[in-house]
Length: 354
Ligand SMILES: [Zn+2]
Image (cartoon, rainbow, N blue to C red; front, side, top):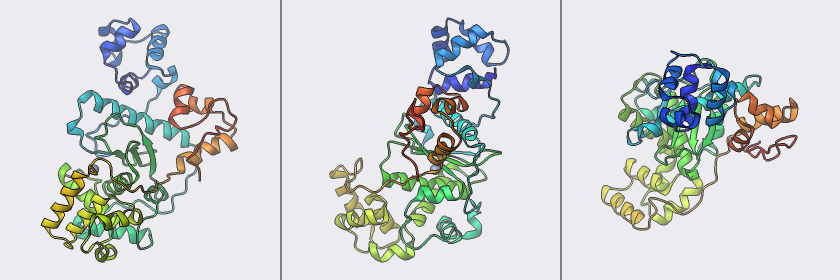
């Protein structure tokens, strides 16, 4: 048993040590000693803990490194507004997701079409220039990016969605470390336009922030990268002249960004003045569009994970139950998490397939 896995798996359920003690009948001081590697654990108690947390015993034996939010490999937004327990739960869930994916993808070759570049902002002049460089290097066609998630996957970045408890977390991204590919986990509660902006923002972090940058500056840089990546100034400027709410609603499905982002872009590019920007924003607030905007945008379709699971199920002859074992999850949880059907030969409910 790996003590740090016990801590991680407990935190992934949002349980305190005291709660786990009550659930298992193991005294809390003993549990604490076990988690700190100061006491050993017998099979009976191990089983009690595994059952209480809803994981197979094997999950507690993994020796993977655990990454904290403070590490350079770990980006996320607005952590300061979340309580510690919620943060720890998310951190645990993200670490576990990465460990599971690494195992599920171990035997599968995913050919990246292009590389994820690491670029120094100062050398390019600014984040917008970096965004243009990335678009150029990847030979993206002019105009809107059709599917940001797929573009990221072509650069070897895994994209998946997860229902984070708090809407304050848009996404968490992890840089590639050792055998782990770079990973972006999106909060599944986001609308498609915000999801795409978030993906572009996270891409900005992955490209520009391999060394520690002051968090606020890093956030600004990632936003400005995302704006240029999704709405290149040279191509969108004339379309934004004299923008109205009606015009924003027309442009939204074309560029697949929110009306708010288009209006902000118009201001940043200097095609509307401050007064106009403010009055548009007042209207947006009055209509309640700050929370939910009208006009739907097509969702991006990341497909690498779905395709990987499909290969295991259809070509390698795994059952969903066997794959759950690889991921050290209970079959029910595994199936729900990856949208698969238990008991069917090929996990037929699989949707994210290309
Ligand atoms: Zn960020």
